[in-house]
Length: 80
Image (cartoon, rainbow, N blue to C red; front, top):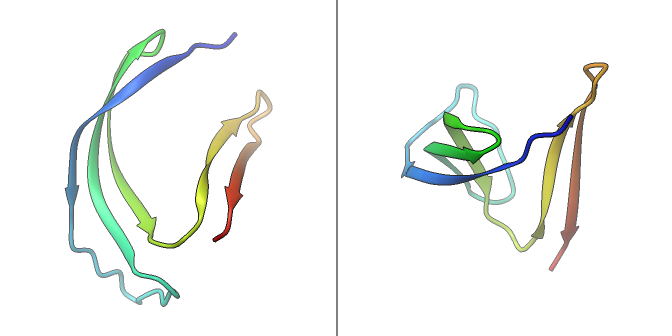
């Protein structure tokens, strides 16, 4: 079975978060709280912490959980 749907971002609020110990990175890292509303065969809402590093990479990605419980992540990207 597969259920599909869309989501819209209901709220996106940048926040200050300074984890201890700090994690040094080559580019600035942003953190925000985000509320999403899901519609379609999947309905509901989610509250999440959104993290991002600002760089020149573009692309997309996804996360999949297989029937046996294995979590897979994928990226489609270009640098520069």
